[in-house]
Every structure is written in C-alpha cells, then in structure tokens.
Length: 234
Picture 1 (cartoon, rainbow, N blue to C red):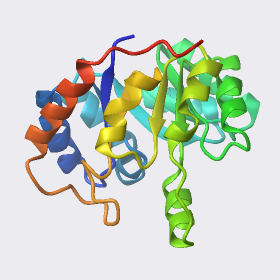
Picture 2 (picture 1 turned 60 degrees about the vertical axis):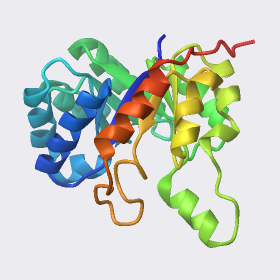
Picture 3 (picture 1 turned 45 degrees about the vertical axis):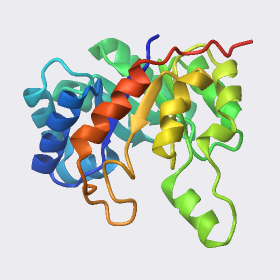
Picture 4 (picture 1 turned 180 degrees about the vertical axis):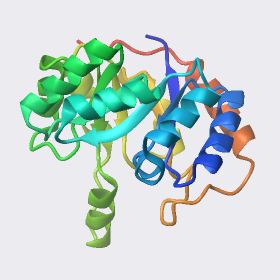
C-alpha cells in the first residue's frame, strides 16, 4: 500500500471544516476525517455536507463507537462516510456489529486500540474481529495528564513497530506526533499518515492554526507520498 495522507478535521464548525478540507485536498491530502469534535458539533449533517462537497473523496467518521455499533455505522454510511471507527475497549459484540454493518453498507472499519490494557493485543483483537485498518492511538487527555504530572508523555511510535508486525491490515499512528514524526510513519510500515494538531488545530484551543497552512501541507504531502512503505513484518 502506498502512503496516504489523512487530515483530521478536528473543528467545531462545518463551514470552517469545509474550507480546511478544500485547501487540504488542493495540497495533496488523500482522505478527509470528520473528527470527533466535528461530529459532536454537526453530527450526520456535517458528514453529509462533506460528502456532498467532496463526492469522490474517502471520508472517515471518527465516531469512537463503544455501543450501538450497527446503528451508528449504518447512520454514518448512509450520510456518506466511507470509513467508521470502533474502539477496542468496546464489547466484542459491538465490534462485530460494526464490522457487519461495514459489509452490509459497503464501508470500511477502522479499529482504534486507545487505552487498551495491552496495545498490541488490542490491535490483534480488532483485526481478528474483522476490522480493515488499525489505529494505534495514544489519547489526548492521557498525554496531557502524564505530562502535567511531570512524566514523559507516551507516543504511538513507542510500540508502532510491534503493532505493525502483529497485524496484517494497514496501520496508522495517532496521538501527539510532531510533523517530522508523522512523516516518518511509512518507515515503520504504517502507510496511513494522519495530520491533525498542531498543524491543523491549536492543541489547546481547537482553533485553526495560523500561518501558510496550504503551502506547509503541500510540502508535507509531497514528503509523505515520496516515501516507500517499509516491510517491517519480519
């Protein structure tokens, strides 16, 4: 799989999200993500507007589903999402329901291992239950909380090689990566590169970042697309 760039629209206003998405696609971004803040603020209507504005672009709905899996996935699929996200900490039956809905409505399922007791086992469970992609994810509050207590915040790069080796489906790493670290993800065997805070949003206020975002994004997309995804299975 060639490297792909996904931009997380972690915004709370659909018009701002649409403007950011348009700029990102011009810069070379491949996938759009309706981030959890956008879904909370705009719901299905926000996903529909993204789909109507960008009819051919993959759209990830970051629901972080924990229950009611089939209905949530069905609703997002009918609104135009091409991918939905379910959590490893959900009951296995919920994960199975999301996977079944994915098959029934022609969308892909991304399994998120955030706050799993064992991140590698969480990723393997998600794959075993039928998820098409793994999101290896260190949470926002977890990182900030540990740092506030004087500790070193964990990074998804800490176990990324082990996650990639443990599963056969594509992996993406999410959670506090610098731009330089995000660009390096294909070297770990993780082809799906997510760009979000701090490039797109301010990490504290959830506002669009200042500066020439379009120009920066193009350089980053070019750098990611030019890489070869390494086979780190062995």
